[in-house]
Length: 583
Image 1: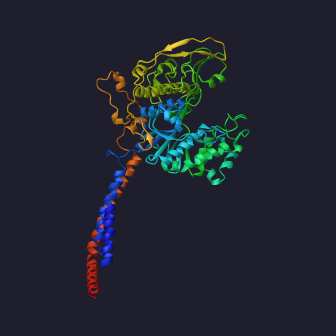
Image 2: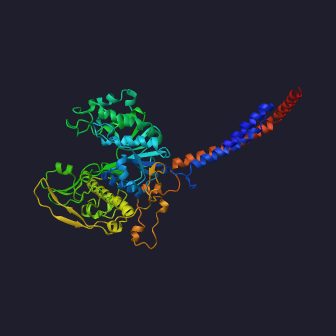
Image 3: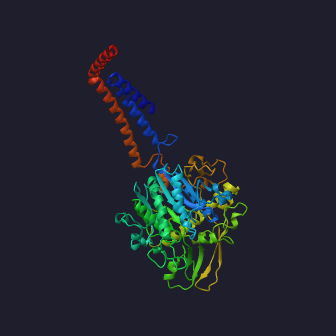
């Protein structure tokens, strides 16, 4: 294209010197149109020549640090991304100082972008959440792949992906200038005097929304918002007006001893994106907190499970209730002998001790001694969207619908899925890094024990042993390798084509050929993009064809109708040139 343009410019220069206004240079128009059209078509295709699908144009990112507590979360999130066949690529934003990084052993967990630590930018306030906006800003400014994808999906490390996130499904609509995000109702500062403290422009305040946790950005929107996200996080965290005894933040953990709101980063995001001019599509049911009951059909089958709170399963009056019972249900009931059947809190893993070993990726410690406790099969109900403990879906049309009777059973089922996903994520890494066989863990299974402990009573408990159910392998793994520039990448090949199970595999046939029934998987296995993207490609191809035809017709008109005029002017120019040369 550059060569063609250069030739045209050279031709114009010669004609200007000779005084000859030839129309012949217009013959290059069809060629130019064809070249531009081929560039457009190639831009809409992958490297292998296949049409680029809408679901391939996503980049998942999340923030972490170099502590063991974040390492197993990263491994679990990465494995869940692969297991559901998530589109595009994924990158961990790892905030780590140089000294710690020099001895850090887990850069191979997944594709990783290393950033400095930001949690100590204020010497008087060690605030770990500074790492989130700081790493986002560093990634957008220093990583060449940041703007390579159309969409950026930001998650928290303590999440598990159940279905791929895409702007074509589940009401997760996003567009340039509009971010899809989860609803966080406790951000009450959006609606009170706190908003005016930090966002002075009334027009910008109209963009405020109670959102956080996960977001889907148009890539350039995140590049625009990241500096303001970081700036306003620092403003909220350091402004005494937002500190204790001010109660307008909605942070219930703020005290005189800890006067700064922990959720300063969340307000930094809300205020920063509003100043950046971004609006939000607020989605209420994309994620379900582990331990909470679903409240509608969407949360009954969520895209994400967020395990940021303590999870408990109870039984009433010492009698096992299929599906267990939540603490809220027990508190509101008249029963006094409430039995705690099972519980787990991720913060126990941070503290360590006993089975809660901090470093779950360390190869010289057997994982059996520190695996995450799984929910026993006896606590799983039949009215929770699946049949039994093997995870298969019910055939009924309402199998994934919330009813009056199945909310509690579904709550327990989601917790069961979460704990299995955490174990599978750590085991997948240990298989790669330690050579630790996962078959004995994932297939043979270790017996899970539920210990009944009295809650608010002195009733003695009993133990029940249940064999751990056999999980099924994912139908396909995610495509995309992550970053190659400025990134430490895992040697694991995550492309769908690389996943092969040999015919002589020892795995049971029902596991080798296991499939899921998620509607999202149908989209992922499609060979063509969604309808809207297909229409865009068709319009682009029509435009290229019309442009080429238009260029050819234009040249033909010039030759036929202007040919005589052009030749007359050419002869006149030759006579003038000869006279000038004679003089």
